[in-house]
Length: 121
Image (cartoon, rainbow, N blue to C red; front, side):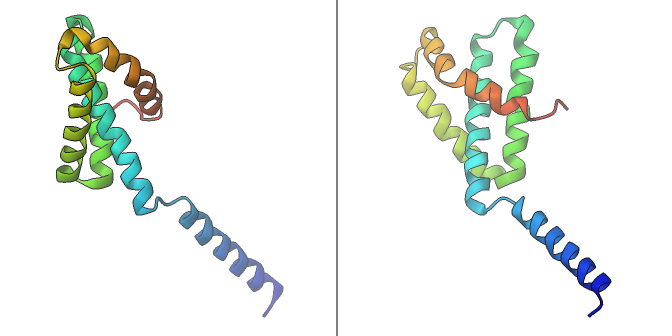
């Protein structure tokens, strides 16, 4: 085999490896989807206590989180993950919207960080 062909073959193998290395495993996709579902639930719940002037921004973050999760696991599974997260938030605040700051304290920073990597649509 000529050295030129060997180099091209080596580059091709490395390219294939690099492409595969960046791919999510099913578990990675599930974990990321759960994170996006949690943040979608957080933002959609937050609109209930958000001033009207900030409603579009908060709701928009929820939509973006939802859409990212949807790409990973589909509607049915994402809905289940969101319902689970929303239930956890309701427990955390004792089903009392006056206690939403406890939910905000728990989820806001993580969700803002997660969504910082998602481009605005």
